[in-house]
Image (cartoon, rainbow, N blue to C red):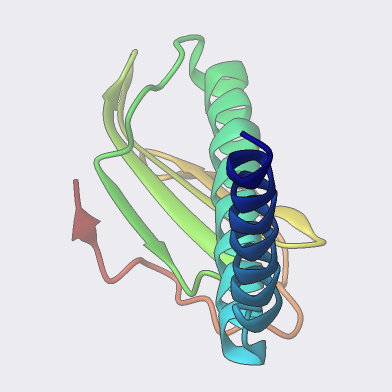
Length: 131
C-alpha cells in the first residue's frame, strides 16, 4: 500500500513539473501582444464611435438610430458611420476621431458639426463597407 502512495505522489509530481514546463514555454510573442493591443484599440474606437454618434444623431433627429447602414474605419484613428432612414432623416453621417470626438455630423444635406480632424487620413465619405 505504501508503494501505491509513493507511486501516486511521484506521478503527481511529474504531472506538476510537466505542467509548469508547458506554461513556462508558451508565452505570448511580441507580435501576438501587438495584435491583442490592436484588437482592443479597434474595439474601443468602434464602441466609442457608435455610442457618441448614436447619441448625436438621436439629439438632432429625435429618433435613435440602430445598426449603421455603412461604416468605414482605419481601426486606429477614425470611424465613419452612416444610417439610412433615421426618423425624419433620410441619411445621417457621423465621423468620430480618437481623442477628438465627433468631427463630422451631417443630417441629410445639413452639416451640424464639421471640425478639422488633425493628423488623420479620414476621407470625407466612407469607402462603404455594407453591413
